[in-house]
Image (tube, rainbow, N blue to C red; front, side, top):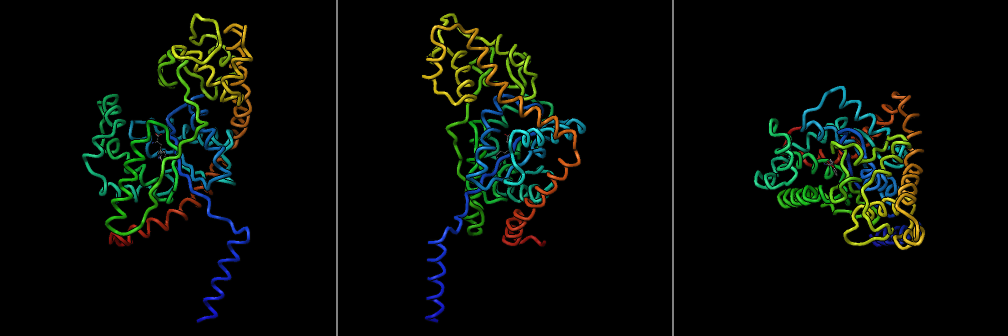
Amino acid sequence: MDQMEHTETTATEAAAASSAPVRKKRIFSAIQPSGQMTLGNYLGAIRNWVAMQDEFDCVYATANLHAITVRQDPKQLKENTTNLFALLIAAGVDPEKSIFFHQSMVPAHAELSWVLSTFTQFGELSRMTQFKDKSQRHADNINAGLFTYPSLMAADILLYQADLVPVGADQKQHLELTRTIAERFNGVYGKTFVVPEPYITKTAARVMSLLDPSKKMSKSDPNTKSFILMVDEPATIMKKFRSAVTDSEACVRYAEGKDGINNLMEIYAACTGLTFAQIEDEFRGKGYGDFKTAVGEAVVAQLEPIQQRYKELLKDKKYLDELARKGAESAARLSARTIEKVYKKVGLVR
Ligand code: TRP
């Protein structure tokens, strides 16, 4: 007995003293394959996905189950899903470092989602601002899935026992509800889920419309000049920046009331790593024309290599499918632990 205790202590001490790896925190995130990605998606989210891969244990998915809460053309959905997968890999999501797959390939998402929907209150779902917005925009199709969307999102996150979820403002409320659901379930059945924290990155840029810089850049804007797509041709990107809204002061500086210039500065800073002060120095005495050209060129420098890799990847759909299948296998293995525990606790025959 004595000896065993002694051995245990020594082993623990040895592990602590050696470079035994501490478990990295786990991140979960997903993006809906609902069409083209914009520069806003890239600088606000995708680039972070890439950056987080070294520090964290990342699980990433295309959220195609979420996408069908609004009516989709089947062929288009499939194509969008593959394209998004390829684009993210082209941008630097590395299937060797991270688990990356399509949500629909791992049935545990749908399974846990159902269980968690019974731990989500009608009143809570009714208060979700995204549900209210979307049911206004799609008044002809306010389906149950659109309503229970947050339970599926909770399942995505809780299945992998994620510690952190990088979220923008629009998903904060859903993450809050995920925490509530996890705590409620843990309260009834004992500790089952890690309660995830929001992960706020300082580096995430908030990119606004090029024509109305009081609004977020959005691909659903009817005027295509208001947004930059990740797959826009370099010439198109330059043209769109040249027509970006500015002001009449003709001075590149970050200040209140200069939303257009502020937005361009934010984009330039995100692409070059320069501070606002450095940018002001660089363009002192120069006109907006020069500045817009520089911003356009900085964006092209970021996107062009991604576009080239993207085109290459799309030539080999088999390879992409194979990567997704491998990712899904790893995801299924991880999520099986959680779903088995949950079914057992709830009393569901497996
Ligand atoms: N609902 C998210 C969005 O539209 C996508 C998403 C699905 C997600 N599941 C998730 C994001 C889990 C973070 C964690 O942007």
